[in-house]
Image 1 (cartoon, rainbow, N blue to C red):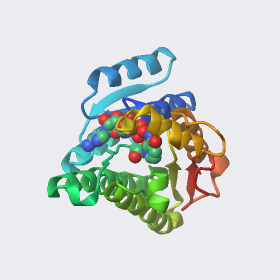
Image 2: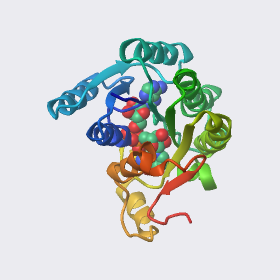
Image 3: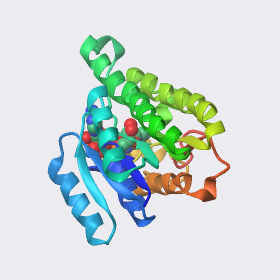
Image 4: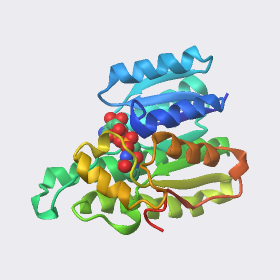
Length: 243
Ligand code: NAD
């Protein structure tokens, strides 16, 4: 059975990805940081459908905890077949109001955490001679978001990193792609008022906010052999908000 590690999978987009990949037959490692109850609930739901799942608590801003998680999965399951580097934190506000620790936290979670998780996954995948990596960026990583400069920097970094890693790993048959969501109504947007959300939606050509399942559908396609000739790409899931 193939294994998939999904970081930040207890809620939102990560949760939808975990549920969708379980239906594809992956054994799911639900990584979480704080939301143990939500992670366990999701795990129980996936198991009740007959699929294999377990939770794993690890802080994606800690290289040591990431390594411990990937070592554990290799030890228990034998292989790491799919990594979905999804965990991230938002950071909204003027750059001049960001403290050193704000900046470090965002970059260490949203960029260095992704790089470290992919590196540890790649080690296993290179020895297996197979694997698939999907990173989650953001439309702000493509075009930059005002008052989200640090987050945009991290997410832009994820895109450049994913393209570079795709080139590096392709000769070994390992694909790396990036999914770049637009406005998806999840907790990460809790800072937005209903009026802000309505204003954003009014700018979306397809006329609605995205759902976590919209993003999960793209991840499922990239995880499948039906996309076996696709690597190094950024798949934008944004209803046409940026084109
Ligand atoms: P969310 O806040 O609901 O989910 C983020 C998840 O990451 C949470 O489960 C959180 O606990 C986890 N996480 C954060 N820091 C962590 C850490 N240090 N270690 C482990 N887990 C950690 O938001 P979401 O919308 O589901 O976000 C999922 C991904 O989609 C993120 O990469 C986000 O940047 C990206 N994204 C979201 C949107 C959107 O509009 N919702 C748009 C573009 C990109």
